[in-house]
Image (cartoon, rainbow, N blue to C red; front, side):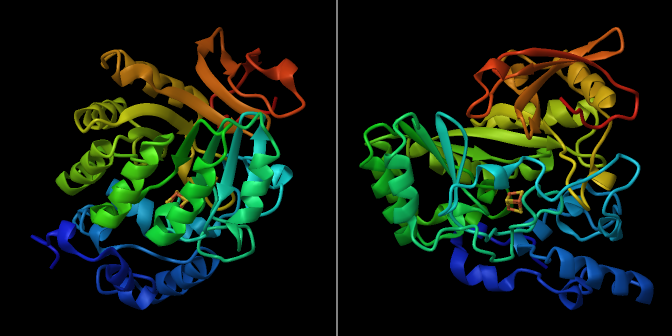
Length: 378
Ligand code: SF4
């Protein structure tokens, strides 16, 4: 029913009201027996459903294993807190340990991440911040000035990441206040706005007022957009146009994908994704190993050895730009690049170390792992 819709002309604020947010609405798209329906109601209570009609329009409803469907529709697998892949947590990246108040997470000397909202255009089922998303709980600052004061008082911070949730869900006026505050801090060299709107809600980026703001800010400080395409089927003409609009404002768009079982866990998937990104001017940057997130790990994580095989096979077919991405573990201790396997051991290189642990920066770690291990303890 949405075929032929011109999403570039749809008002992003009013369209949010058409998102599918209940099981009853979902039943317009899928058939559920009574038991499935009861289970999915429980899943939705734990991690609310929120799917834009644009993203729903990408699903192949004839394929029960459709990768787009897996990323947005609730699954009964989410009732499993921790399964065969191992133990889980709600905070795999150790965010809470680095919470400085007012939404500021300060894990590395040079970067501050600010959780500016708990809202997203879509609630991705694999989200590692699902403990925050869609559940207002005080993580986001009521007043950004507190975050600005913290950043001002820490001159080692040379870049700030606006994150969430999805900052692009804020009004353009609210974003303006944040960006102007950051522009006034001399030691902030550049700002990143982490957003999945190019993928899940590109219509947000057809707002000319937003584009003017981004262009203006870009004349004062460099501005980057880390985004999150996971599958080549997400790279639609309208997504490509949204990315083009960001680039025309002078922004650099980098992609942080997650390796997900049943979504992008073949070399073909990774090759098509990276080549597709390059074709629309997005830089492949990270490919994350799926974190041990409660209700996510069990059905989305694949073993590390398998991940290395997929990445190695994909890299062999990618040109230099396509293979620039790092295969990454976003660990509590800092980011670890997965370099490969040798003699049954996984080879890791730490690329960021937490504040107070400079000795860990750039260390190489060799660890025995079995065929099923999906995570490492270091
Ligand atoms: S857009 Fe990002 S933060 Fe929001 S639900 Fe999806 S993965 Fe999580």
